[in-house]
Image (cartoon, rainbow, N blue to C red; front, side):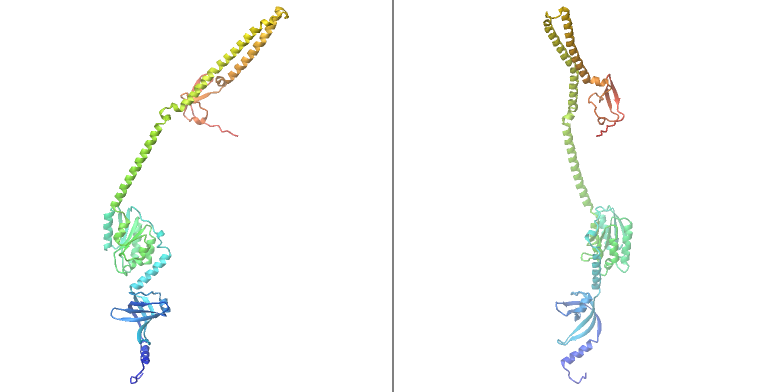
Length: 447
């Protein structure tokens, strides 16, 4: 376009636009303003470096495809070219490629890894293990020269000096830190600890990147014992913190979480001792009360309360047996006496004249007397036979025996009432025996 000819504003802006669009650049800056309202065909934002500011736009499809969600304060790296908006005559940078720069890019990568590990269930609360109440050995993985190791050792020595500490000194930042941390976890696990502390002091986000390494995260999950992390300070949360069994805000807090204090242990033991003392006292008192109730029972105060009724029944049975035979004989004698009196009473009536003389009367009287005495003898013999059959002595005389306990007390009716080695008394038809039981065998009844 010739310089000696005046041009219109539109021509001037179009000329500048053509010139600017030929300049392709990669620009790094911090987002200071951002506008992304629904319905906009482009995302509009401003980047600056403290000395200068630059208006930018990025078409909607390209912005959505970048995967970056812009926020004020983010450091971004852009590729594109300058252009001019003719209606306003305003220069702007048309962004064709967008990514996070520096820490922003690292945070995006860490967030993506966190989402992936979370989808695998590595961060679920139910996967994480409980901590031992009284660890005997505590593993520590950290830098041997940092402040963190001193804080941990001082805290454990002050709170819980009973535990043995196994330390694996490893670098906690730099390119080789992730591999060293994994090896340190393996070495400490081989020492058979009850819990492992993975700690380091504070630092920049880039310094903490070894604890955002996927390999470190999986090594923590694979640890045979619970892992407590104390990485950086309270605002810092790494991938290692997310998958650890417990996340503490600082190395000191991690050491405090790993073991109780001596004061806490002493208080717990004192409380337990008091509870055991009260429980034992209640147990003794209950047993004493029970024994007292048993002592007051008649069965223990007077042993005859158990065997008295049975002994009395035996006495009554013996008395009944002793009285049975004499009483029956006495009754039979009385009956015979009555028969005799009746005979004497009717005898004179038989001396009638129509009898064949005295001899015939005597013969009749003899026959009548014989019949009367025969019936009486038969009755007495029958009664005596029945009494003899009922007599225990007759039963014993047939070869039976009565077994009693050694003191001659209870009658033994079943083999289950005695055991091998027990003494017993056996009454026979004539005399008695003292015996010792060698074996017992119960009779099986068949239907």
